[in-house]
Length: 309
Ligand SMILES: Nc1ncnc2c1ncn2[C@@H]1O[C@H](COP(=O)(O)OP(=O)(O)OP(=O)(O)O)[C@@H](O)[C@H]1O
Ligand SMILES: [Mg+2]
Image (tube, rainbow, N blue to C red; front, side, top):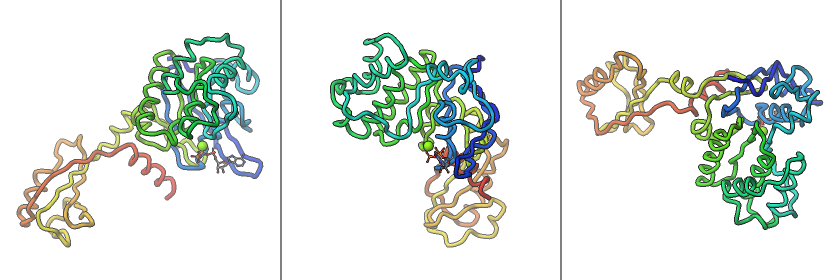
């Protein structure tokens, strides 16, 4: 597959001596949706800003197609659309003017049909003649997305695109990302909503303290975490788990109303039957069962915590 973005050993230390990026290397193929996850201060915005030419890295290089982001910045900026994390809007212009102006800045000819399509996709068409100052916070964020798309960029960065956007509109925004990809775009997003990454990303990167800890196919990552939990609700509350059940390594739920059994769903023997008969031998009556699969959120936290240990 064609590589659209290539990041090679990029490091950035801010003037105050803080190393925000530490030898980041990453290749993004054309047409991919990539989600960058990481706690506050991990370096996500710094990385995006370096690619977009807002921050200058002190080591390494970044290429979009064959263009270097420092030496060929005009070409790379034209290929890139950025939705910044912070609201940066000229409040007094109208939504429509903001989009038209943004498109014009890149020297693109007017395209009313395309701008209409963007505004509709972001549920902003009704607001097209409204001054931005009169919009709600979530609407302003969507205007930022619309503005970033106005010049038909091939590589789109969404730095927390749905922060403060309500649930229904967030889902529409996810649909829009898929549509943009179908139209040939490549999308890199940062998010604190793990559900968002789980829903739309092809690959996931986890960054912490300026280090890219992991880059993995989303499905593979979730399969790796093949642990499942069986939550066994019991009829009578338990104070302590009987010693004869030690082999199953059960956890007692803090309410005493359930025990939790962890197993590997890919193992040939899960041990569930043996565990349930052992419960019955100990006169523990099962009331209900529930299974729980590791979510990407747990995967993420396990990585970040591993790093902190
Ligand atoms: N202009 C700057 N000068 C000095 N330090 C900075 C500057 N911008 C960011 N930093 C520091 O660099 C680190 C990475 O910041 P960055 O904004 O890239 O994090 P982030 O992963 O985007 O976090 P968040 O999830 O909060 O948006 C932080 O410790 C931050 O304080
Ligand atoms: Mg950020």
